[in-house]
Length: 264
Length: 359
Image 1 (cartoon, one colour):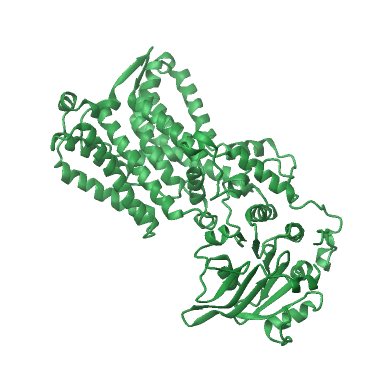
Image 2: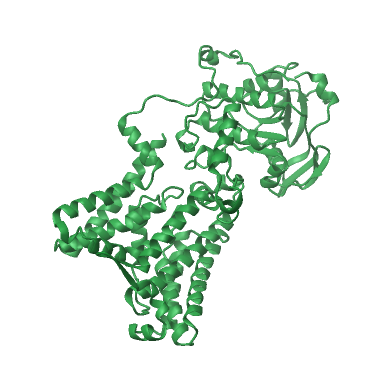
């Protein structure tokens, strides 16, 4: 991802002066946020820095008290994650939001099922299992996940990494504009983490920008194009992982070091 | 836009990756044992266990009792005896699949039947209209359950325990403990006994109540497996939070389930009039326990999200087969209850074991 390209491009998703208070606690304190097309933006910060609140505001899970969110330059107000989803922002939650007893195909289409055309679909509300299975299979093979023999396998029969794969594939299948990944590797082993990281790079190569929230510095430095460092409720700085070391990032995060004014 | 490359290990702890497979999150394909396969089969076919038990028990009673048991007449008698339990069990299945429980099903059934009877005889309404009022009563009771559970967020057990008492008491207060006699219904409002009417098919005797149960189960099977509403019901029972984040309206879903459960109970109330002939406020006292028994033996998980409505019907039939079979053997009726108790515990243990197939 060439850096100079980003400077000339317009951000796809921006947040300006976002504020969210819970009683006397200010979770988001005049925070800004920028996501450019085709990039992986990592969001890092200490526990309690407000990064999950920031992400929730962007994904529609909470409504900020002040500030504005723009998508493609248009002002947006998401009342719920469903609305954000309709606008093309897909979030892969840390708990994945999958139904364990349902099949892979059922899970991918949960809440947006495809019905059969004509009488069967309109009157008898019959689902088009064939079409959904085909689309699910296509999406999974596109992402190199198609060693699955059976798309009707219950999600609970999959390993942690495979479940993450299904959740990311679901987001990639429908997230036309932005995908937010919340700690995608937190619960995974080394090998499975590696595969999920490759999956993320694969999604980016399709041109979909990704917001990655992670505590894992090696993972962040490996795949992020830019790193948004959150501290005390606001964006402290945005760094290029090529220009800084992991210890610099941790120093910024904890306040041990103060960055130069934001360039990005 | 850079192509994704298999990245080189960054840290010491990632060295193991060097020669590992490059497939992204591929799926294991090691050969499982026969027992494993069997468990997986049961896992993906939740009604199989109860079907196997049903067939085996039919076979055993057929062998020991011979033609006395294994005749079209006896077998259809079992169907007639389980029709009410099967219909109420269908309502119970829907609720239990959402990880809830409905203790008020029997009471709603009786109140609906009393409303159907009293509206025809006390107020002189046309019986068709009275039946409609019975259905509305069932739906309303279900709606109250649903709102208290989905909106007020009270536990289903408590809400329906309370509603059981409330509905049953209303039933006695409203009916003044009066039974409407069979002959009166026969002459003035025969449609109330519609589900008790029989037709013969060789030696087999069917009532419309039996047909109603089978049709109801078939329709619900279709709805659960082939409509979005059905898939959402499973998702809500499985993990309501995940369902919510996936865009399922969990509250609306729960309310609709309890309303439909109430409507099905009203149908059972109508079928109950056909079965016993009269309208009695003291009938069907054990319908809630019987329906839960059928659901549990049918392999529907009490923790929600798993099971098949067909399993519930097989479960109800197993109870019917045991009752009739043991009665024909001339054993004490308590043996039936004892065996059904054992079956319930075995069924839940089997459910736990099958669930481990996911590991």
